[in-house]
Length: 545
Image (tube, rainbow, N blue to C red; front, side):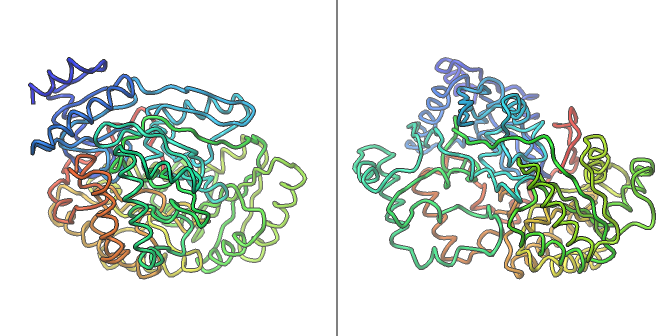
């Protein structure tokens, strides 16, 4: 690889590294896997990305395939920011706000910008980007776009895809395209292009037109779905066409996103936060269903179960001592309203209180920031579970991020508890219950053969449960390598074949992040599991989920 490193360094403005320590650092992300790259490239501009892609394309034409993986801050939990070939690391240079229209709130950014810094910039102008993930302080916006990330505000505002107007992206052959919705007439011009972009539009249009019946089997009755590729939002009935919804959430497997134009929302710092305790799961589910049926949605609707509280109390007895007392409830709900109209916000809070009074045993409502921070300390106590390290092992991100229909939440919860009991695992669930999107990170010692086997049995049974309930294996997070073996199980062979055809259209030599989303088996994942799983990449910040 030294010849390739020297060649690239000669032609790129950014830096190229092949040192052992750099390759070791980029061999891991926040997933349980390890996979060292051959080279690390810090692109200084879009032209560096284009030249790197063009170079690998020309090598592939001669029979030598060197994969390219685009990487942000390495907070991905599915192994999607790992690769064996060239690692393009964006945060070093491609990290700027290029434009900010304070009137419309639209912002143009480079993919490597830190999410938290962008959010701070927007907030100084009274705006914010709502689908921010829990990892916003240590993740990039490009990574959020690649994963179609969502977070605590998504119950009201939706996921990242709702806020990406257009992107600039480098294709597998080094060609640069700009996406955005084009009319039926403009699509005709795209179809006539004698470029790789033209080939893409022609092939994708044909794929969609010839497989309408198969596409009709794709929708799931869930609030969000990142499994596979989003083939449903490309072409509308009016004939308009947009590749943006497809590239958002594609995890760098179809193209490398370098810039994005995003919409934002007005920020209201004056919110109302509520915390409700429930003695049983059925009452909590009924409350959530009624809250979701309201015209004005809460901006936050999250939960933790009593198991989280019990385990936090064992690990850090004083963390919640002054906030929540024994006996612990079966579930705690966190509800926030951020309506810009103060009168409407108060009205929504009153309606919510009436609903919660029917089902909850305790209700606390706060409007002052200091009291709200005390409530959120209960929700954020899950960080204690994520960072534990003892003889029992560590909390592993292997079955988090799935999503089920709201009306099947109780079945999902009971089914997950039953799986844990069968395998002798302590359960603890939390997450975006308002979307049916919950998280669970079992504590296992991945270095031990028995626990490793247990982890993969749990994954099989857990994702089978989610699929049986009409859910998606990838709700808040994405497929990556970890969930790639289950994509075909969710959709069936016909849809899976379309995904493979789409990948072939964009990336005929399988250069872009191969093994992510498609083409990875459970045996492949087992071979990549590291025995020393830790969160060393992000300990400058407290890991959140």
